[in-house]
Length: 164
Image (spheres, helix red, strand yellow):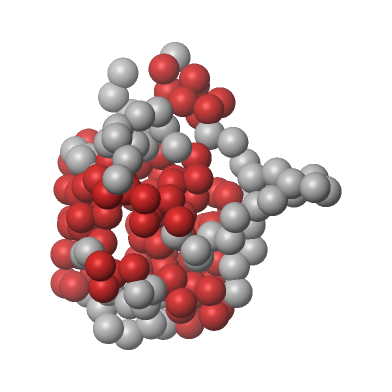
């Protein structure tokens, strides 16, 4: 019941004329993490982190396979209904945002501002991207474990088990 309420709270960006949709690779909400207080589930922060984590995963093993880029694009399109170019995925993977703080710090702070459903969606998207090239390196596994821990998700969450 709570999960249904949280799903309804997650809104897709409007594309109606006269409304502004923030670019997914600007990461404005992520940058604001260090000054904000914990609050309600934030759909913009979710959008940005979803793209950031999935894009970063393409570089987790120091080799970006083209199928991983295509997988990020497909998963983002499926979950967020938005298209990303190859360049946007690569830019997000190597974003300068990592110079100010490691991804783990951003995710730890963001975990307090995202719903459980949002955090699980990020992890499920990550699994899809990591499995795209039919192999998981030890560095990719370490990246996955870091993301799961930083988002404060359990092994049950990581396995996709829905605990009532």
